[in-house]
Image (cartoon, rainbow over all chains, first blue to last red; front, side, top):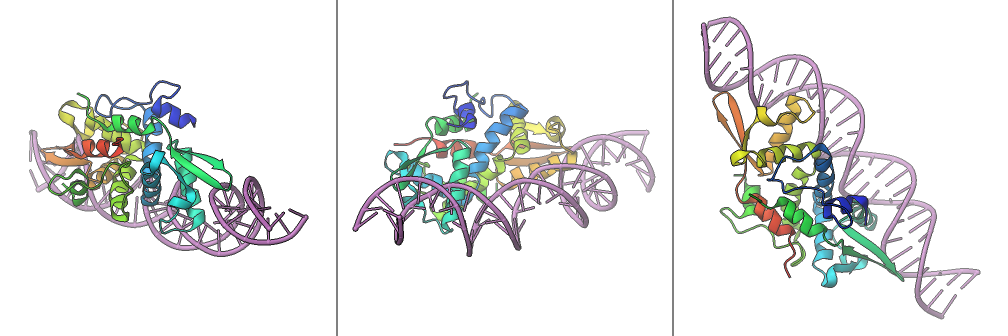
Length: 117
Length: 117
DNA sequence: CGCTAGCTTCGACATGCATCTATGTTGACA
DNA sequence: TGTCAACATAGATGCATGTCGAAGCTAGCG
């Protein structure tokens, strides 16, 4: 998992950020969290992510999700962005490459956006 | 509230999207949701939003939150983006303009990112 | 009225980014 | 080894966007 993902999800480090409503973010925290949201801020990437996340075991072969209306290199480009943002993990198994949702990251982001009074 | 915000939060319309893990998003749904994430995908905007959200009553004067390291016109530009995305609402009261977090939108996004098996 | 303060809009500029085609890499299989 | 299929990378291009200074708008106050 990337350092970014660790920072946000707290897999092997303390969680990145408090709830958005708890206190204002520091410059550093904002930078980390914004990078995650930015990765989800493109329709094609969001669809790709959704396809992986809704697949059985939250894992899918590229060939299963590549039909999003753009060229194959563009799909690859977007999957790389999602990987770099710490949202997806990839693994090659023979001919195919499988992507799966990074653990803990989704719930971390969800908690980040939830009201916490 | 903007049409976008209504679509996502379901304030006066059915909610925009299922949970990300429930089923894959349609092209339309992805476009709507990505626009919200995109608005949060900039560090300066995220800090501004956090400042408003963590203020008492989730409401703040521009003068209270404008100190984020960029010029005042740039702050205004970003606040406009957050408004257009349906995340913030603005209201003029005398000399000052107050921004507050749009109701329902935050929890809608939070639910969107939460696992739902 | 004029002046000032708070905020928005305008115009310009540099950078970023989504997309494509072409090419490279990696693994399976005959 | 040669060939094909599945993905990734490289390079180019056009549009989007973050930033600024300058100018415009609106409300309060002498």
